[in-house]
Length: 172
Image 1 (cartoon, one colour):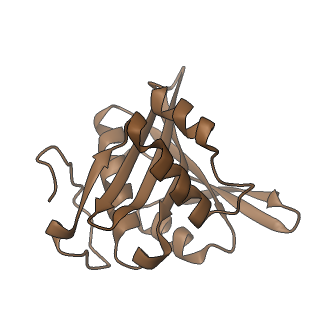
Image 2 (image 1 turned 180 degrees about the vertical axis):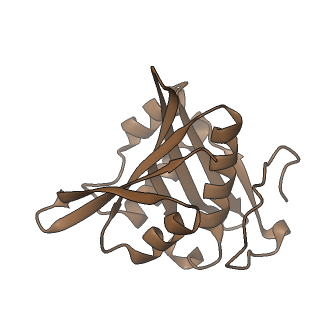
């Protein structure tokens, strides 16, 4: 069940969510590092996934937020965001959005992104950036439905021949 503090954006629901009593979104804490590490290793290539020590450091970092989707099956997905303040204000970078392969297509990434963006906007963040692999079409479509736009192409960003896109979303 969702906690009463889970914020929601008024956005169109393109994919039906599982019934609300089957999962919850919550902030990660230090005790969640091992679960986050296992999900990173399951979803991403080992050279691209966060290492356990990196996740432990992020969980201690006051500029980082990690939201998780948990269900009776365990950790189903996560969103990792870092904030940076400059002269223009605070911007955020999405470092990782991952959903367990068995739970893809259920709207969990959409819901994580919705909750994360709502929180960032409520904190006064003016811009969110991310990088996504060119071939990751479902992820690109998801970001585009939220209004993210491509600002540059990143040749060989993920590896030789694996190009990326830098995308951004300005606060509405």
